[in-house]
Image 1: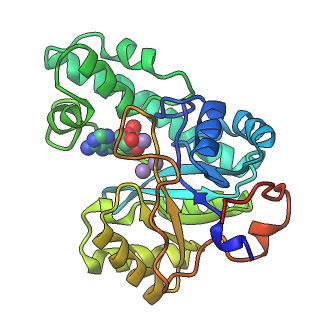
Image 2: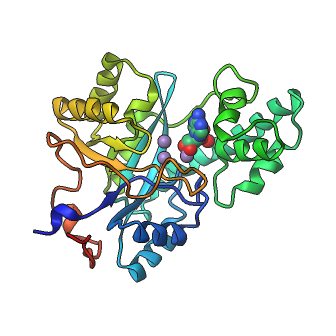
Length: 295
Ligand code: AMP
Ligand code: MN
Ligand code: MN
Ligand code: MN
C-alpha cells in the first residue's frame, strides 16, 4: 500500500561519464533528496555501477544498474537508456567498448578542429575534466568555459560543439537495433531517453518508436528533467498510443546545473503504465527497498 509513494529517478550521470559527482556521492545525494530507486545511466559505460551499488546498500536505496547508449538513427543522435542491465554481459560490454573507441577518436578530431580554429590544448583540457573512461563534449565544454571562450556550458555548445560549428564532429554511434540487442542480451529493458529533445516531428517520432519496438524496445521516457510539462503530456500520449511503458528520470549531471535535481520529477500522467510495473522490478537480483518515502 506504500508502493504508490516510492520515488523513482531512472536517469542520472556520475563521473564515470559526464556527471560531476562520483557514483557514491550521487547515491548519497539521491537518498537525501528522497529517491528510493535510482538508475545510474552513464553514457556508454557501466564503470560507475559497482561503486554506486555498494553505496546504495549502505544508504538503503535501490540502485538500478543502467547505461545510456549513444545511437545514430537516420543521421541523428538518439539516446537509448538500458535499465536493469547485467554489467557482466559480454555482448553489452563489447558494444559499449566500440562506442568508447569512437569517442576517443572523436575527441582527437574535435581537438584538431578547435586547434585550427585558434583554440589549442583542448584534448588535454577536456581529458582533465574526464575522470572516467569516456570523453564527452561536456568535458570539452567545461574546458572552453575555463578558457573564457564562452560564458557557460550551454553557450559553448551553441558556439562550438553543435552542427555547423567549428568543433562539431558528426556522431557515428551504434545502430538502433544493435543498442537494443545489447541491452536485451544483458537482461535489461530499453527506453528511448528524453524523446522531446530530438526535434523530431510527430511522424518521425512515431517511425523511431515503431522501429524501436520492432527490435524489442519497451519504454519511453515520458517524464524527464529536460521535458517541459506539455512535452511530458505529449510523450504520455505517444507511449499510450504505441503501447510503450513509461519511464521517468531527471538526467541529473551534477549540482552545477541548478535547474535539474535528483528525484524532483512530476508524476507520470494517469494514462501511463510505469516501466517499474511488473515482477522484475520487485523481485530478482535487487535488494528490496528498505525505507519507503514518507506517506
Ligand atoms: P556527447 O555524448 O559526448 O556528444 O555529449 C552529449 C552530452 O552533452 C549530453 O549528454 C549532455 O550532457 C550534453 N549536452 C548536449 N547538448 C547540450 C547543450 N546544448 N547544452 C548543454 N549540454 C549539452
Ligand atoms: Mn550527458
Ligand atoms: Mn541523453
Ligand atoms: Mn543522460
